[in-house]
View: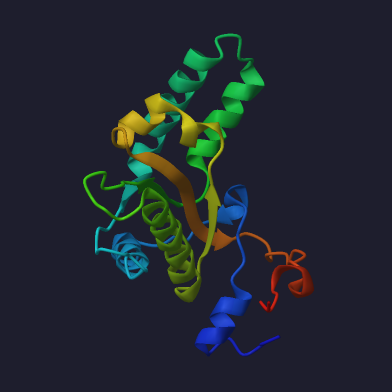
Length: 192
């Protein structure tokens, strides 16, 4: 395992997901977020389609985002209790920065949808790597909101889909290492 944080490989081996609720200020400023998004777009992209979009939810829009989520949740679950609603509101306000990642497939292209979706996922991962390289941590969440049409429609329209909510900030406590896959189970050598 690499311990030197000055090399590109060490950045890859030390990146951890941060729990968005544990990400605090300072967060990236507007220029840093733009740079993160530019780095995110340097991802494999068959056909040069850029089948993704990033929407930054500014801090002054977090209350509106919370209201959107609460309205969408209540429309799906009119019997929702107070604690559920408070949890939705907290979700909207966690971490200093929020980027909504959208899969924006080009349906008029011959490039398979699956490849376009993989490219979107790679762009999201590049965004997380960029955040880490700049000294921040990120958490990529979906939850029910990523699959809700009312929430999606606030950021785009079908056939777009929300790939995730990427929260970025400074860890308020050390990030924990989690168990990683056993390489003997996940990496094989092909032979006939």
